[in-house]
Amino acid sequence: MTIYALNYIMSLCQIYNFGDSSYTLISIRKGKRKGKSMPMNDQSPWGKKKKPGTPEDFLAALIQKIRDAFNDESNDSPPSQKGEGPDPATVLAGIGKVALVVLAIIGFQVIYSSFYTIEPGEQGIVMRFGKYNRTTEPGLRFKLPYIEDMEKVDVKTVRKEEFGFRTRVPGQNTTFSKEGFELESLMLTGDKNVIDVAWIVQFTVSDPVRFLFKVLNVRQAIRDNSETVIRRIVGNMDFDYVLGNRSVLAGMAQQELQKDLQKLESGVHISTLQLLDITPTDAVKPAFNEVNEADQDMKRLVNEAEETYNKVIPKARGSAKQIIEESHGYAVQRVNNARGETARFNAIVTEYMKAKEVTRRRMYLETMQDVLPKAKQIYVMDGEEQTVLPLLNLTGK
Image 1 (cartoon, rainbow, N blue to C red):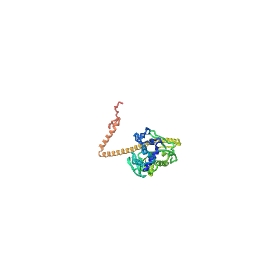
Image 2: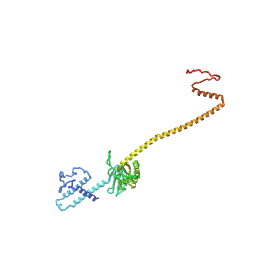
Image 3: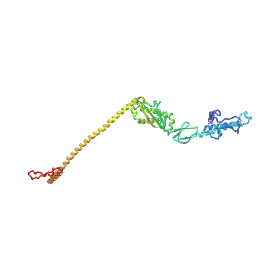
Image 4: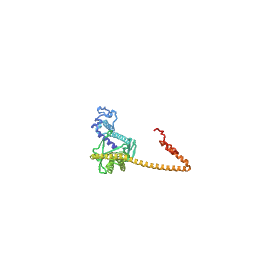
């Protein structure tokens, strides 16, 4: 770990190229003495009492302080000893300082890499020595440094794959482009007609572990399987059926695609598969429009004939049923009247046999009550008169 930290410090020194590159930390003058004031143009950035803005700035400042410490130690040695080689005590002190700095850097890295944050809508997949260990939920979490690694997976965002077109400018006025994507959209139907189909697939991550480890490229797997499913379904249907049953085909394709992805253990859930545009190719569109117009005319004539049929035939059937029902009613009426007259006559005969004179008189009076109100003129004749008497005209006519 110490070697790793030293290599890291050396790489930072090479990256920043102290004193030569555009990112100059400080210009160090040889032979300066400890305690001497520095010019304004040679003053270091940390002399302004400002904290470094990034971790790289902090490490660069720390490295510069180490270099200043070594320069100060070498300058503080007596002049008579400068030509006799380095002092062992000074070298050991410098090594001790470097070791402390390296240990501080390593400790900082250990603490910094031990904690991580999972945002809402994400899940963290922790791997210990490259093998799956556990899944963490949103919040501040801890992992073992240098032993465990962590991958974040967004499980709430709805991802989308487009086929036969691409979205150029998303937003309220979204623009699309179909140029260059004919190989995705052109298909052959069951009756050997070419059709242009554009669709989208929307999916979410249902199992982040499978999403990371089971399939190398999940998006490419979804694209390949989706195109295979759509081409198989369209290839088994007629041209007219594909044009008129968009929602049915989309439901079938979504179910088959979900089954295929479950077999692959991709860890995704297909939320939507929608067929956006189903049209014939540009080469056959004029003929297709003519066929549609003829088909519309045929349907219009059929609808008009059915309308006339629905008006005339039910009316004729109703009239026939009315006549038949009236005949049945008339027959029942006649039979009932005859039965009633028969019963009445039988009742009268019974009463007549009991009292002939009374019955005869009652029948006579009942008959007169029915006949006299209908007569316009009444003639009273004397039964004993032998000659015809002139009638007195009382009406004045």
